[in-house]
Length: 353
Image (cartoon, rainbow, N blue to C red; front, top):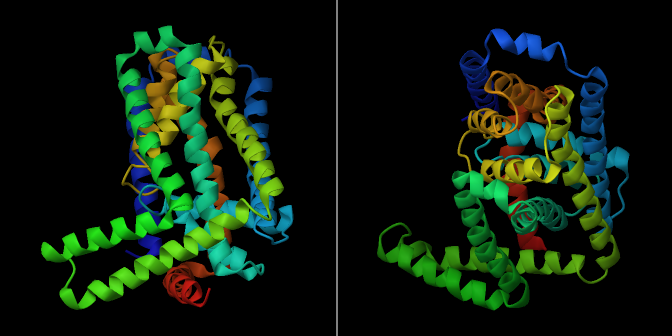
């Protein structure tokens, strides 16, 4: 599917989701309640979006410094914006990587390091979201007890993150184990007919090369760039806290009371699960899920419109700016060509490195 078609599909799903959410939630009391909204807090929510963008760009600065490269906020801000666009057009928000790697490469960062930077940035977000859960379990046990579905989601996330964390540590400490397991999987795939016998050796070589490249570049963060890597974690924590403060800010703005940690817990579960939704940019699930989260803290008649407002502020504005950047710089055809070239460049660059 072309970039233009993927973006059109994203817009379509978002439009249908917004119409559905508003249709099933808005009633006669909605607009009366909205009249009581605190305009200052609404402006604060808007301002928080700008802070989120700045901190995300600063996080890239820290990670590039950790990898031995020097970029400024001015260099990394376009990387942040283009990630919104790339994430919107691909399932599980996975498409931002190639665009980010391209811009980083154009700024002089080698391909291998660019890939490592984008991977580490994503992993930081996922693991920080997961770390919110154990803290919330101790801080708000009654809240989880009242919402059994959330309790099961918490259990799922904790199991997933434990397994993923274990694999991440093994890949760093003993990459040879990962190679053995990968080669074993390749043999099994050959036996069931997914990989041909003539392609086993080629597949094994490529997997081993990818693992070596990943391991080598990840180690840079924990050796020469350790201080900057620690700084990136601090910025990532601050970035996530500011981002997750937009939702409670909107809830308080319309006059409802909310416990910050309860809202953070529910929001962190939603954000974590959205990484595994197979629609472009997690569209549809994000709007419906956000409505369900808001409904935990506000009347149903306000949940839909607050969910849409939250998505507009936290995601759609970034997607719009990223889209304008892509269209202006590449055009739709150029964006398609870029993705194809970037995949080839990643393969060639990793072989050289």
